[in-house]
Length: 103
Image 1 (spheres, one colour):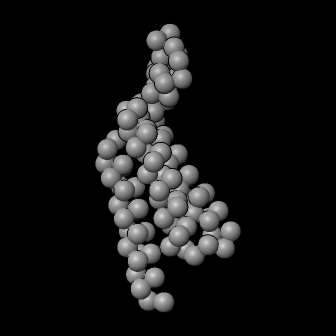
Image 2 (image 1 turned 90 degrees about the horizontal axis):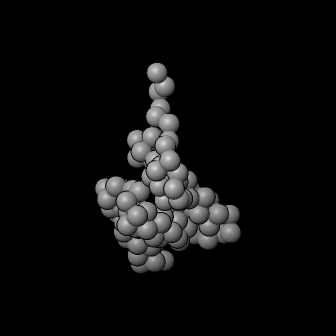
């Protein structure tokens, strides 16, 4: 008895059904991991370009928020994770406003 189910013909019709099948087999965490990895890459890339940390945080959070909204509209990501990235974006905006008011 296999641990994972094997895809049938209806699971392999197009790219959306393939990703839905893969996400189901990964217990819904595949695209959450994708969004988090994209966030980390964008944040480190912003820091490598010499931007302040709060700007890199906002950039990474914005990119991940847009991606998570698109994935949520496709039904590939739960809404709780969309709210997580929106909260990260809000935290970055507060961080930026506090940093600008200091200096």
